[in-house]
Image (cartoon, rainbow, N blue to C red; front, side, top):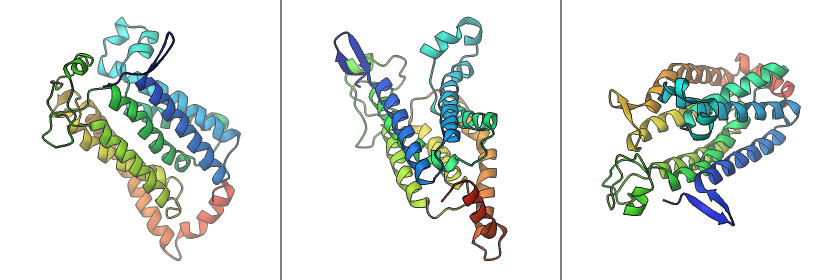
Length: 277
């Protein structure tokens, strides 16, 4: 474990904070490049990005109240923001809602999900490096690539129920880094092949939901009910909405491929009006 990446005089640069911040910058850069490539860059996209950043930050931190409802009575908003638990699932949900709200406030109606999808994947891959270096690796494993912690490293991870010196643990965050990098490449491959607006974001969210549900079995997260963690129950709660989006995507893709389908004629006009190409 490497909680500190550098010490500059009296300033300590934490590994987690550094890589999360770097991940946000990488994601923002990819959004700008992708928006320019699609001819969508402008004030509307700036508002959407701002909404995503604000919503993501709020969603990431607000999960502290869901994990510990007593915080609402005994902790201030400032304390929760500074010291509360952070959740990627909450951050993604908050960012999604933040973009929708920001766009509605300014009347920006262009579909932007496909611009954000590759950016989220690559930004997550970078940000998860900070988690790999600072958080409990995962549950016990007999696989040859298990992470073995020293007594000093175990002592630096309070609350880790599976951390025992010399015992191999799943590198669960390394699994996610690999997934996010593969997802980024997959989305770039899909980009010219999926013409229905919103399809890239739907495909990414569906793939990540399936992956995240599975990888939770390797992580050192608290099991709360029926052998599942809070993250898994959160995914199950949202799965009907996600399944509905996937069903719409499959139906729209089938119509689009049909020579006489409605979308086959409507999409070129929609893409042109929305600045997509």
